[in-house]
Image 1 (cartoon, rainbow, N blue to C red):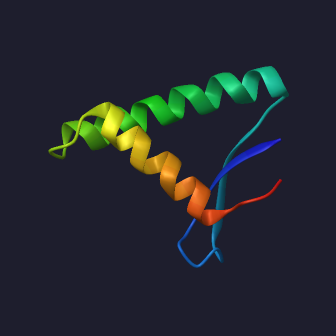
Image 2: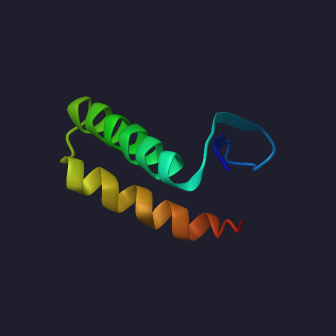
Length: 65
């Protein structure tokens, strides 16, 4: 499995992990936590607000496995 980043157009994919399911979940949670904390620290939003916005964006992107 891979964890990756894509641009808004969905054209550029940047993969940064290849791990089994258990490792992937742990890695994803750690990465998301770090990004959420940094974004919250550098904005006027709380970590919860950043997470909510990210979840809304993920739904809008309608990505599939």
